[in-house]
Amino acid sequence: MATSDRYPVTQKYLMTRAQALSFPPSFFEMKFGKNDVYGVVVDIPMPGNILTTMVCFINGAANLYFNNGGEYVGASQKYRNLVQAANALVVNSAQLVPKAEKTRQFDLPKGRTQYVYLLTKNGTYKAEFQPGLIPETEPEKRAVYVLYQRVLGELRNCQLKDDMEARKSGK
Image 1 (cartoon, one colour):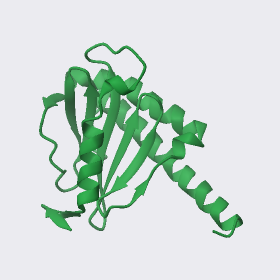
Image 2 (cartoon, one colour):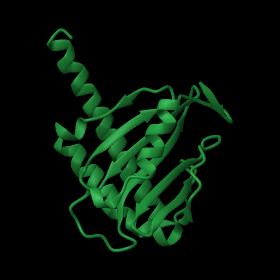
Image 3 (cartoon, helix red, strand yellow):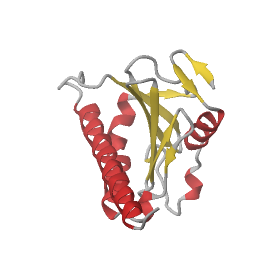
Image 4 (cartoon, one colour):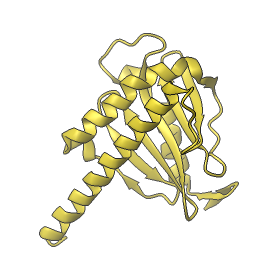
């Protein structure tokens, strides 16, 4: 495992994250304005040297990738609530574009800072979040933070349902 500042990462994680950050809008059979958001990539540092990257797209796809190479993918194909939450995040993230910084640098976060990348036809925009410290004077950030926490909650519910199904079927 390579180390990036304090988070050890696998090559698989770095490749998957890079693919998500460079995903083309042409994949979706929709017309986008230049600043319409079609994808959101959120880097979320967690305790125990764990770095989670959540990837959501306009079609409701939502996946989790972990710095140790693990992943949780495909739940959007089974769970409608997850699709709705992911779509709401992506659609509503457009309000954050004017407050975000256009970037071509995709560094991994340091400390507890969370990075939110907004994918648009006009390029990728980055906003930094300090969990629990988003001022009321930044309603766009607060809204996006609440929405991506909702997607994380739905992903967790899907994982629990999948685990329960696996136990019932003896897998």
